[in-house]
Image 1: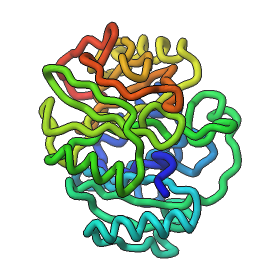
Image 2: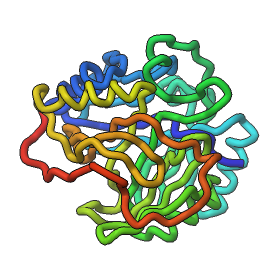
Image 3: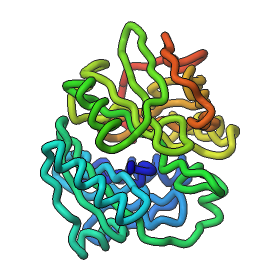
Image 4: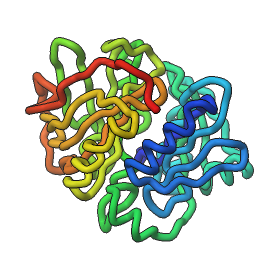
Length: 295
């Protein structure tokens, strides 16, 4: 059994960065924003109570990477495999499950320090306006999750083995170019829900390069791109198209130590055969070094 989709991400962030992140995700990207009692906010992309959560804190950290699995049997099997691989697993208690809006789950820290939560989700109702905007969660008879995440590992080969053999993600393809070497994994119809890189491009183990949000309308990518700099955010990579998943997208520097990719049109993993690409983009995606802090 395996994880089924990337279900949520939780971040701790200083109060001074929360407003800019809320502007980027809510006013520009169109996620639905809801404040949380302890400070910070939730961001919704579908009917689930949150897909992204930003907690007010003294310092930045990635607080949780939530991987959804199908049912209690799959959850128990995954916990057994993670434990047998040498990782200490802790069950989420009732209060923690309520905080995450899940039915059940467990947590562990992987070899690079990523705080992983594997969970069975609680039911939630559709959200027609959000469902019409984002490719997220389950769409008709297909599963996509919230998008994808690019993680950095001190031992890339070991991380690849763990996420494929223990958590059950399947390798989609690989991109090797002079700057980096990334392996891409899928666990549903999305071309990739996870990519793993070594300590390249200035990244350190336990950090993320970016996460990706996908919208249904290509024109929406253009509209958001046109508004970014006027809103005080710097483009990291210009509009372009990726070689492996065909995603039409741009990257923006978030008010945090990562970037966000915003795109449309990713390929279905079930239709892709494994291959090694020698460039990340077929056109565009011109890199702009960071010049100023986001709003």
